[in-house]
Image 1 (tube, rainbow over the protein chains, first blue to last red):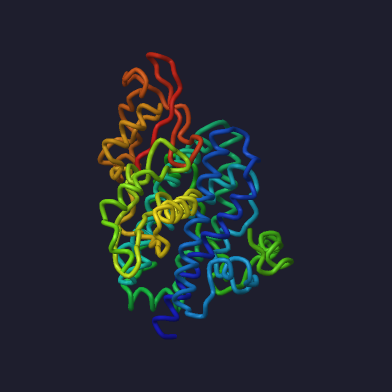
Image 2 (cartoon, chains in turn yellow, blue; image 1 turned 90 degrees about the vertical axis):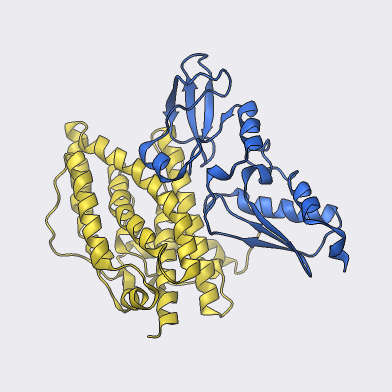
Amino acid sequence: MNKERALLGYVTRLGDNALVLGQRMVELVAAYPELEEELANANFALDYIGQARMFYTYAGELEGKGRGEDDFAFLRDENEFHNLLLLEQPNGHFGDSVARLVLFEAFYLAQLEALTRCRAERLAEIAARAEKEIRYHLRHNTQWLVRLGDGTDESHRRAQASVDELWRFTGEMFEADEIDTIVEKAYDGPNLGELRERWQADIEAILVNATLGRPEDGWMTSGGKAGRHTEHLGYMIAEMQYLQRSHPGASW
Amino acid sequence: MVTAAYSRDEILRWLGKVADPEIPVLSITDLGIVREVEIGERITVALSPTYSGCPATEVIENSVLQTLREHGIEDVEIRRVLSPPWTTDWISDEGRDKLRQYGIAPPERGAGKRALLRGERNVACPRCGATATELVSEFGSTACKASYRCSECLEPFEYFKCI
């Protein structure tokens, strides 16, 4: 794989992560139990969709086949999405959402910070924009995880169960494949080993604050980065792509 | 060349009348998102998005095109500039005054990471100026604002968050 192809794959994956998580959050719009969190979720979802648009537009330009953001979002099949499996899991309850966001955003923030220093200029620019937003998200979501973990017996029990349940999807974030390796070498991209150390330290500190236990690293589920998904993604994109699939080229 | 009939300052002055759709009291030049106006074969206006997903971005771009068209300039290119990323520090002093008069507390200067990580300090009430205020909700009517309440005059108000 040459470095241009690897960069295209990398940028598309970033777009897939942002879009799939953003779409999961969009599913919760108007479903939150209180107004502040309703607004927080909608605003955060909007950040992710906006980031996906920037990544996809850039990917389309790198690819050079005239595909734009909508082609990437609405006209690709399940196995062409290379997002992390963690992000496509169904929403579950509020604690599940919070746990997923904290686990992912502690990684994503470190990834974006590293990307602001990479030698793919446009990617570094998008990362600088996105990094500010994710820093804000993570601060907010961490406060919630602490509130749930260090809250009532019931909220503690459920927050711990959420973290335990999602833990097996976190290994995939740090599994370097050819794309990660080439982008690291050719563009000074992130080193996943370093990101892992930073993530573990950050997550362990958050879990201590939240009085939650750190799950053991057992068997980790992976495959999303290569297009092998859990059953949940297909349903999600079927709904997301329905309009563009039924009415190709529809616009308003 | 038709475009030579306009100066950069003139165009900037016209852009100074383009309102931000979410906070119409602010113009896009007050907001600090107009990064460059280049006069060449065509007019190029460089704009920075505020937030990645800000729904106002496209509305603003259309307003810029429309405003320039009203002044007889048809050949305009809008360029999105991401770097360096927009920060609330770029909101002009005039813009800050306008925000205050509009009832929105302007963002603290020196926004950056400190404000994001440690939260805001001493947000002054835009109505009575008191600094005894309390955060009601970190999220308000738009992504860029938080809701506060003044402990002196008891009025609720919005605060433009630092980013």
